[in-house]
Length: 157
Length: 157
DNA sequence: TATTGTTATACTCTATAACTATA
DNA sequence: TATAGTTATAGAGTATAACAATA
Image (tube, rainbow over all chains, first blue to last red; front, side, top):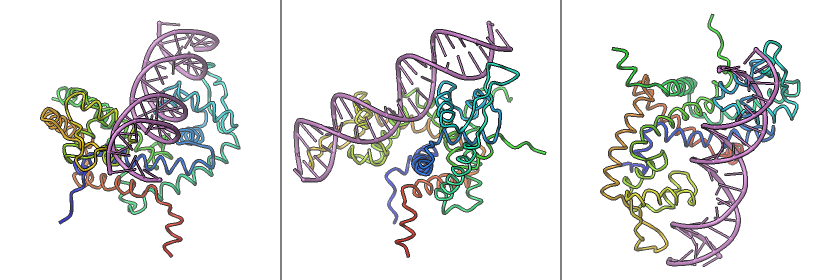
């Protein structure tokens, strides 16, 4: 008969497998982004700015789920390298509208292709349907977080 | 028509969804483990020791994918609380055999039940088949990591 | 000479409090 | 008074180098 894996109990929990899978993903994507001098967070910010011209830092911090003080350093780095520009918003002079530069867009296009290749590497062996289900399952878990299930049940009566 | 999500590009990458899902899981499991004064890593170590009596610290470090110096503090904490014991291995007096105490086993049983409830909460809305596929997909991604695909292809010719 | 566990330490990521300039 | 962005800082989590005891 087949031997039980020594971590079989923990393997039943999605958090255990997710931590290990995420470690593998992070190592691979950071290697894929190294030629562009990008990390996961700087890449994510660059993609969000390309897809949403004029985005505010506070909105970006919300989307990437990082604290505003930590985002400042990320934006500083992208701006210093001439990949994005901070432009004062016309309607609210406290805020910045974030915009990609031509240089930033070229780096974005190349890095996005590299990350797509990374995604294909990491999900090799999964069918398209299985990949789609994985993405949906992760989203479901994210949405299930932060819910007070007990009071939800009680108020739902 | 439906509006495109602002992070639609990033949502296509499993790493993006996984980071967000894992953040939700970590927050929920830490809340579930707080009554037992356990964290994710101390819980995982306790489960591994219960399931594998006599496990060595070096083996546990390999399984949990944490560096030996960092594991020392985890084991110190569990031992100080009387949940596990370090016993010198008879065949190798450099090594410790890790064993759970009766107190540790009782805490393990209660915490394991709490984490099972946490898993059910976080994966609510997924069918059993979808949950099983999620676990398998995460394992596949973990296994796809750390492989030099180019040389694998070349040596495979 | 190599390995187990340990100490010390550094580096990254993340979180919070307090400040500025605008609103 | 509240908000956008910033500064400074503290706390986790994670990584490496070097050591003592044993193999």
